[in-house]
Image (tube, rainbow, N blue to C red; front, top):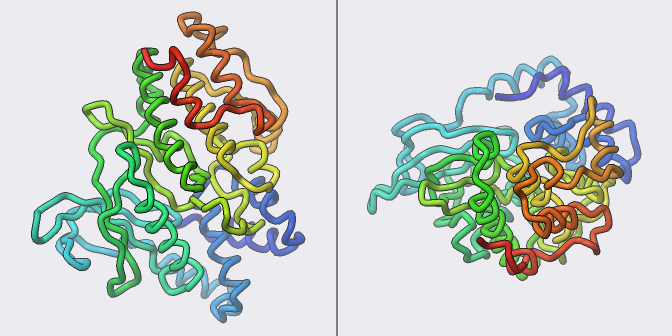
Length: 339
């Protein structure tokens, strides 16, 4: 569902009032951990930069046009290329995901499409194509597989592997046994090692972007914010992501790198092993300050059953200095991490 227009418009104009080089950090402060809100504002800023005439319409008219697009883009029974829509799985600021079935091999597929308001802009079409290329480039059992990318009547689609299971968010709430949690961490690290070896930075590792299948296999989803490290990172995008799982350098609007993904994984590891979030703040600004400056309590001080070397390893993943964090490859191979 689209974010309340008055809130979007307020943040949009606030972002325009600050210089471009500090706009990313300002947006992070204003949007908090709402990726959908950030996407709404980013889309308007992209349109502004591209001088799209839509933004010159009266705010009330623009709001009415945006709110009219709340309905799902696709309906049950519709066809997109060789896929028939079965149901809507979810929607956010940067895409709608449907359960679909392939007309020929009857394979269930997750079909991601751009929302109408983004599908007409070259900026978002390029980002969508980049997501498809980036995900497809990584051949790894712990990364969702891309089957196909292409155009259709309303824009473009990505056909991906459909994952049945639970999100890592649910797994954290259910408190996995320590040996199971460590196995999950290892699988994610293995996948990130494969991505980082290709120079690909995910930039949005969080429990909602991770799924655990019934057989215990973990899958990283949603490479919508991923970038290749040789690509020039736009300052307006540098702080994209979810505040609760951002690294200190991302919160400061600095260039994200492989160490940024490790910090995000460190937060997840902390939660999986202890059931607690490592940083605290009553407001988004306070939370950001905590992430940037506070050293969390050692994991084994919360859960004594955690081995000391594992507790120390998680602490190094959360080091404020990116250079002090382990690599994904090193993390996955750490002695004793696999029980």
